[in-house]
Image (cartoon, rainbow, N blue to C red; front, side, top):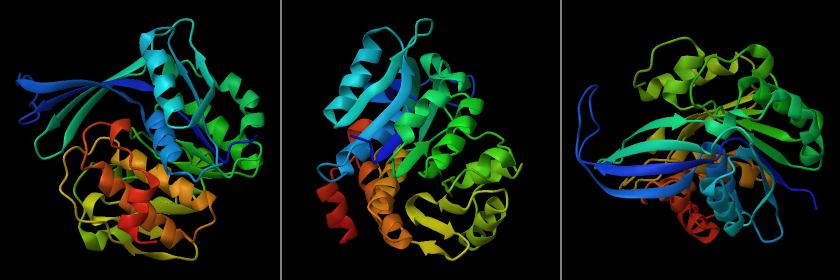
Length: 310
C-alpha cells in the first residue's frame, strides 16, 4: 500500500538537559533532569504525523541511521507511532545522528546537532525514492540531510504529483531552482530573514505580510511564516492573512515547528482548506510545547481536534 505522507529527512537521538538559563559563550551552567529522547527533524515530523493521521492512512519515513543501538531505538519509536520505517536504511560508515539540547525554564532551547548517518543519504540514491513518492499526497522535507539530496528529492516528489512541504531548517541559503519545487515553505522568522540574506531579529506583527511576500518571491508557491505563540502568516497567490495561535504555558519548544509541519501535512492530505489546515497545525504545535521532548511531545489527534474545535 502506498503511503499518503512521506517524510524525507533526519533521525537523531536527542540528549536533553533542563537548565535554569542557557549558557553564554564560554559559560558553564548546572543542568538537571537529563533525558535521552528520540528526535531529528524528519523523525519528529514522521512521528507526529503518525499520531495524527486517521486509521488506515500510512506515513513512511525515508532516512539513514547508524548500525548501533540508537538507530534501532529510533526505528522502534517511529514504528510504535505507526510509521513505516522500511525505507530507513543503516549506514555502514556513520553513527546515528545525535542532538545536544539545553532547555531553560522559559521553554527556550539551544541545540547542537552532529548529523552522522543523516549525511549518508546521497543524491545518487534519490531516483530510487521515486517508487516511494508514487501515490503519496504530501512529502515533507527539512534541511538536516545533504542539500543536493533535498533538491533532487523535491524535484522527483513533484514529478510524481505530490504536494511538497519544506521546513527550511537549520537555516541556510537556498537557490531558486530548489525553491521552485516547493509547494509550501514554512520558515520561522529567523529562517525567513536568512533566506533573504538578512540577520536574525524579532519581527513586529505588522512586518509579517511583507516578509512572507518577499520570501515567496524567491520561488515557493506558498509561504507559511511560523510566528511561535502568535500563530502563522499565510501568503499565496490566492490568500494572504494572519492565523492566530493558541495561548498555552510553554514548557519546551523543541519540535514545535516539526509538529506544526506534520499536522499541516495531515490536514492537507485530507483535502482540508488551507485556513483549516493551519488552525489544525497551530493547535498541534501549541499542545506540543506544553510537554518536554521532541517526539514525546507530539499530541494525539483527539487532543488537537478538541483544541482546534474542527
